[in-house]
Image (tube, rainbow, N blue to C red; front, side, top):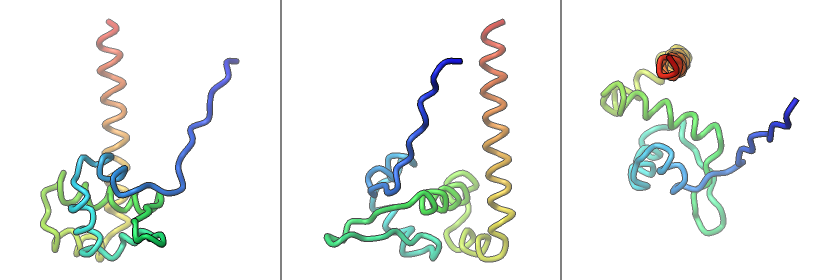
Length: 111
């Protein structure tokens, strides 16, 4: 069995790394941090924001609601307040369906 290198995840991500993940400006990330209580990055002695995996996951939820679903910020806040768990489940379903779609497209290209 071939050796498979384990995927290494960082403990903290800088704001520029997070912005790059979502193709957003750092100012957009800072604005969302002020608007959404679920975003609470740590700050070092210099005041630089350090995002954990949980922060990135929460940012993905916000991104999904605002950018992909087209909700307003107040609508996204309300959705997270009322039914965060259901929103997370919906995002997971969409991710899985996208992965299946990609696999099917790769399989179709092999034919």
